Length: 115
Length: 117
Image 1 (cartoon, rainbow over the protein chains, first blue to last red):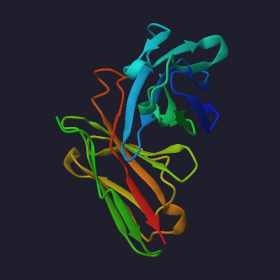
Image 2 (cartoon, each protein chain N blue to C red; image 1 turned 30 degrees about the vertical axis):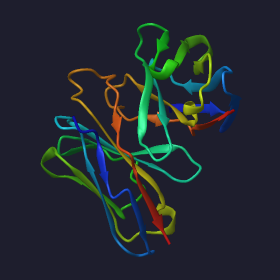
Image 3 (cartoon, rainbow over the protein chains, first blue to last red; image 1 turned 60 degrees about the vertical axis):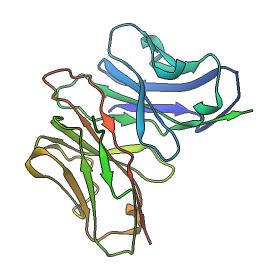
């Protein structure tokens, strides 16, 4: 069975500080990994995705994530937090199996950015 | 181009009543997914349509939930009768044909917040 674990349901950082949101997955087959963000009163928006090409993936709004197979991780980072980054972030995975198209999500991490 | 749209955005109903949620996917997207997030928990897959056919409905909680996709366009998710534990946010997502790219991301709607009282 596939699963995704996001460590820390709430993360607070100061404006300008590094953002690090953790995501670990478990899988017996190569995964495709995604980070989605949900701003208040909005839907889920794709930040970035890993699709077995480059292991360091750059996304929108200055976010990036690195796929580390040995650690089964796909942590999300941003060098300098902005107030506008306050949102809930979801790590998700799908697999290369032909029958498994749906996303499996982590439980989400609420990011608070302090002035 | 319009994104995935969901109606209504909020719904409050009494236990035992019926509610129908609607999702309009991005035009041309064969794949349509329903997900649900119960408060405080992860977003969970409910089912997957390819055009008008149910590809996978393994996530549907029970037979009080009925999903349809008329003519491969919009989809409805009916809950009848609703129970308190059905409260949550219901998300719809769509993606292009799998023939094009397996790893094409899904585009999500804003969700419908359902409250059963």
